[in-house]
Length: 132
Image 1 (tube, helix red, strand yellow):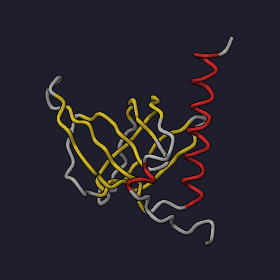
Image 2 (spheres, one colour; image 1 turned 180 degrees about the vertical axis):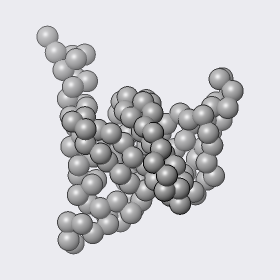
Image 3 (spheres, rainbow, N blue to C red; image 1 turned 90 degrees about the horizontal axis):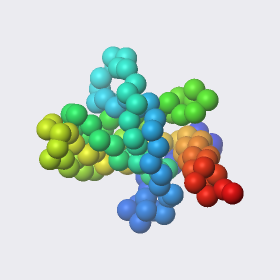
């Protein structure tokens, strides 16, 4: 497969095989059809190579396709499409939702870039909390 070819979407069992970590990152989520330049907002993002979980003040329809942009360390811009799997209301504060989504139509090179950053996040976390 060429390096820029889209990877096949992960199966439900594959998504749980990817390491997950919660990190604070600038993120921009908007409907795929919205081409306006929205601002990045710093959020705690539960991130894996298969998708994200994030708390938002807006809701999206299940199965909606979103444009997802993350600003990774070193000013690395990561962009992918995200399919909304679930949106759960959070009781407090009002109008707050937990969005669960999976990355779709992602090139293999982009997935590998994301995996490298996730490993770096894990390394930094372990060094901070478990080094002597």
